[in-house]
Length: 357
Ligand code: PMV
Image (spheres, rainbow, N blue to C red):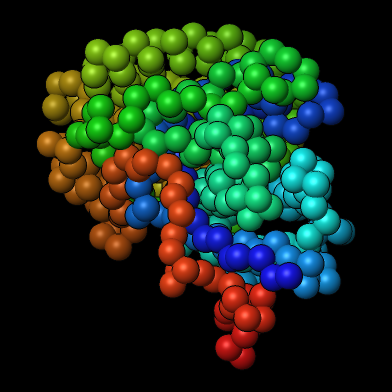
């Protein structure tokens, strides 16, 4: 009996205090420190359709029209997806196979958190396709199992991911700090430096940095302190404090990456020119009006307030040109889409794109 196709849209998040480094152990994606992020609106997004059915002979996963090998993949996130799928099937007591089609509306693997967006959207929709009715906290835990930072994209606005302490990871999930309407003036000026794939995956970095960087030893405690100070700044809507913490934490992340052996170098000369330009802008203004932050890639995300948006866009454009600057606001987290948005052909149970060939 063919199941119903379900479709959802989800978005990336930008961490102001970053997750970098995993606790060792058997459970996937347990962080050494808590982190805090902003979930972005649908300027950048992932759309995912899933159908579970006995009519399907095997599980398939398409990401951006590319079929992933669920059985023999070398991509850790695809392997985690397969493991999660088997876990959820056991909970749902079903042996139905699934067809998953996922499309990112932004450069994949460019350090723009496409994996967080993809994993959050899949984590949101997969249990539903298997007939499970879970709450957002449970969905956050599920998304974490595919890509750690994805657990934060399950909620809108400012989100905290408490590291948790239990070895089974059952207390490591995100929670909403404040929704997107609490501080709506916050804007993210996304400044594209390169859309190429990164050379070192985050998965590799999460293990290699804690194992080889001596600077990393101090990072978890500092990051934990920063999460506390940032929560306090958000509660007071203190933008200069938020900006200071954000820039310091990005600097600290990239310092430990460089101290990793062999080093992980994501920032380029263009990234560094953006850092200088933002520091100069803040100096000219006489206060912190903008904060750069970089994930595992060269692209900058510059957090500012609506009233400074144009100055920050102009500064970013002066470095990367006018076509490489996008602006996102805060988003509300994943949501279901109607049947007309489905990426799966309901009759053939395959990718609509393939059904049309
Ligand atoms: O969730 P992962 O494994 O893709 O790791 C993402 C890590 C950073 O984006 C660099 C930081 C973060 O907290 O999002």
